[in-house]
Amino acid sequence: MSESWRTRLTDLSFWAERASGIGLVLLLVVFTALDPSFLSSGNIAGILSASAALIILAVAQTFVVATAGIDLSIASVMTLGIVVLGQLYAAGTPLALCFVGAVLAGLLAGLVNGFLVARAKITDFVVTLGMLSAASGLGLILSDGQPVTVTEGFFFDISLDGPVSMVSWIVVVAIVIAVIAHVVLFHTRFGTHVLATGGSPEAATATGIRTDRVKMGVYAIAGLLAGLAAIIVVARLGSTPPAANTTYLLNSVAAVVLGGVSLFGGKASILGPVFGALLLTVLLNGLTTLGVSQYYQPLSVGVVVVAAAFLMRFQK
Image 1 (tube, one colour):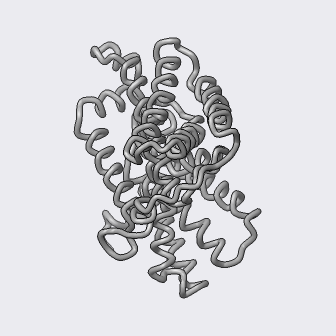
Image 2: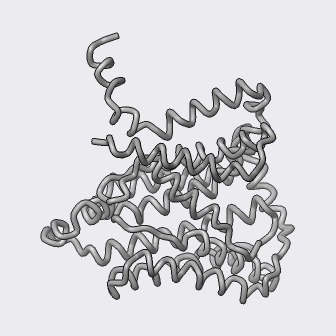
């Protein structure tokens, strides 16, 4: 082994920057050793489909965290999009317009978050915590607490079929969104401004960057992507549950942490959170496959996230 590789392997920052990818591989090896059927085509297809919505939410959360913010409302905004889609569908609205309604509902919530954080100068924690409650409540009011069953064949097609074996169309959508997000964050002026705003708002402002607009932009993106994730969830479930699933919120933040995105802003990645979302999905799927009680699953996620946060201390 060369001296340079020996130095890398003994450097904790090397492992910290690759925690999600390395952890994902280790989990696949462990679960396969414990249950040889874990890597069956059916289970892999299920894992990928189950991770699609979380990947989109993790990408959305990454944009916000890159500016040193956080969006606690992302799962509730997604639920609002789900409810809007369901109510429009129940009213006989064409499916394409149902999709537009879900995305617009998410975008509107994101714009409200962005305005209150960037222009009203209210702490992001307070704003998004309030939106968490408001979006959840509005979803319950609009739906009267009742889910709508969606029997449209299109949903079955995109959730079960795909361009290649084991990869459904909803997974393709998640991958495309991740690719676009990578391009936006690292190959556009807006992405440069996002990272600059998170790294040092004062310095960014001094160079002429409108940090308030940047912050409004990232919350709008988060809301829009939450609306897209709503469509993915409905496609998988075949219904529109009106109750917010806080697991999506916790896991979206966990995926960002696992992906090596700095919670202090200025440093981000898209591939890392994608691997983080896959890791969490594999972890929960593997525990379920092995018959581990669901009560232990949140504990396992917590341990993994804290371990990843510890490794982040050694990032350069």
